[in-house]
Amino acid sequence: MIDRHTLRLGVNIDHVATIRNARGGGHPDPLRAAHLAAEAGADGITAHLREDRRHISDEDIDRLMGELTLPLNLEMAATDEMMAIALRHRPHAVCLVPENREERTTEGGLDAAGQHNRLAPMVADLLAASARVSLFVEADPRQLEAAVSLKAPVVELHAGAYCDACYEGDGAAAGRELERLQEAAAIGAELGLEVHAGHGLTFDTVGPVAAIAEVKELNIGHFLIGEAIFIGLDASIKRMRALMDEARAETLSTS
View 1 (cartoon, rainbow, N blue to C red):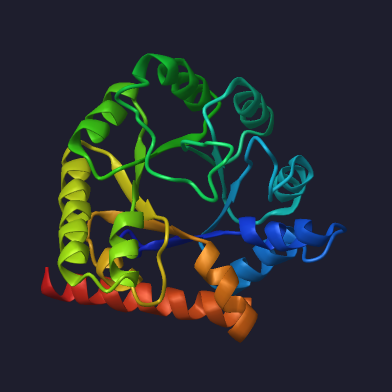
View 2: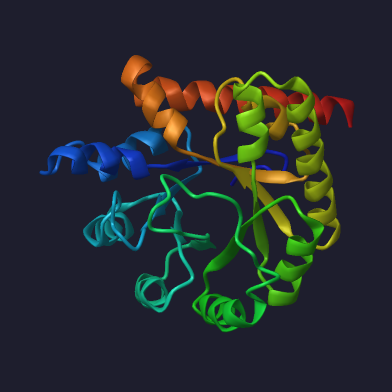
């Protein structure tokens, strides 16, 4: 059992499939990556089944559901096709994300407030199927309030703006974006939501986000797979896990 103070790490294996699909065939295998992640200390596996199937495939989801020993968090667009797949497989968790066919990665958060009426029956059906429903949203109180109204128990805060500002060396902007994440996490917890965060996190940026006491889970993928090219997936995940634990320990020691 995971201690309630421990920050969970969900490892996204999408880009193992991206590399496989670049050439075709079965190598590298996302399921093998999932097993390695489990051995390295991941608490869950995240996979985004996109409408265009650019990385994770339907067969990958079948295999993950059949063999995975860790909880599976299925990221997906809020469409009828994806709903049917989720309700058929009944993964541990479903994270609803915005999706545009031309984007390189998920850009921005889901407009839960603006799409409330369309999302409401989907969230209800997923909850009825015993899935832990998460909404991937911006650090915006309006979106958090919409999640409560939709009865989604979890929100994942989009950390991309903070990570981008850090990468660009804009300390002032990074500070502002980090403060937005901190404030949103506090508001979310006050509203009774379980708060997660993800998108763009690296060894250099994870510490301040992991230190936010209200955040219970981080989902990280692209950086871990990229870093694995140089140091191996096991070492990449273990280092990220250690940096997260160090930051959380500091938070607990000062609280």
